Image 1 (cartoon, rainbow, N blue to C red):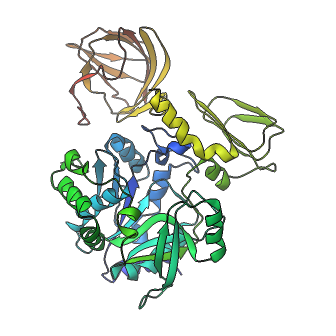
Image 2 (image 1 turned 90 degrees about the vertical axis):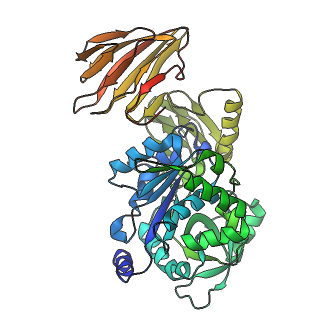
Image 3 (image 1 turned 30 degrees about the vertical axis):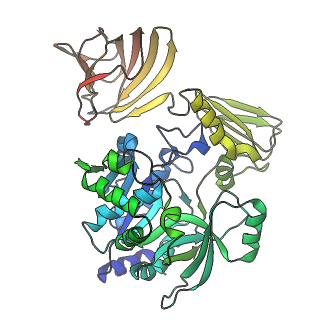
Length: 488
């Protein structure tokens, strides 16, 4: 079956349009120290030269018969998501900005409300942005098999045949095929949250259970109808959050007061475990949610000793290990069944059986008010990024990179002065009433309290070294006077 051709024919016959809904609100704490709150795992290049978000978007192109996607993300990730999608040529219908994480139930409800106002018959293909699908053609075939059921009002999920008794996944117990629906779409007896190992083994042996992939095909109308019957508080909160939200340059910023009242529940807990309309399409599509370092090791390319190696790593007498460096040299000797992940500000060392407990370490670091759970040393902004090189009492040194044509906000600081030295490219600097053009090896001093702005007028990235000095050097000592990106 030519899936792309069949899906295109399906659209040409006048059937309901399939609207991909990409959920990009997760924090990905189990993949710390690579994944941080400000730059979570869906934005990382973990399995290819594209991020997980970009890979997800690439599976939902127009030539497969899909509409442009609707993206739901945390408002703090707005520009990161937009830049990554632009880099792969994907322009969403809209991006819905969540003021706070409320899980997948409210996120999907907001997308359904927005879509139904524009296409009353819209079908939503809901997908997390941080999963891996090794065989997209099988994914598209499964979507084809589920179309008739979704159009008939069923809430269709996609069940992955389990290959092991995994305790990190939810399970779906399938029942008989749906009446009047072809292509082997099955009913659902029950959903089971992450079981213990013995229970997972029984599920595997029975042959009646599937891993819950977290991917759904359903009409916006059907989902909202079920919410009206099952969880009216969630529906009313999301309806008000969309109605009182603000449209901003291709984005919808949900009203924080109303959205904050929505119960923080997954679609499974909010609807699917209570509805009579759930259905499952079995699919074998080389799927993984990459929920831990061991899961990432499991889909990696191993050497003859069972090791998966990424980055600048040398090793001797090492077996069945996952060793990853994001820059610095990692040397490993005499290890077995160990995970080592090194970034420029943190190193994780865990026994293979403990790699799934990383979230506990992250929570401990949060309670200690440490920066490592939240930020990398490289922090991304709409205009580019900056990397902290060194810091000490009353000083901080950063390397700032500004994209071609981009500019920082017009701003001032009450507690610090800054020295800028251009090391690559050309900069236009506004300092008080003066505007100067700086080339490589030229510098400027920004006194405390002086309004200033940095712009890259060139066609190549601008790079400069910033030396801050003063009594307080926090990022909240920024007073924005004006900003091209609408930030306050």
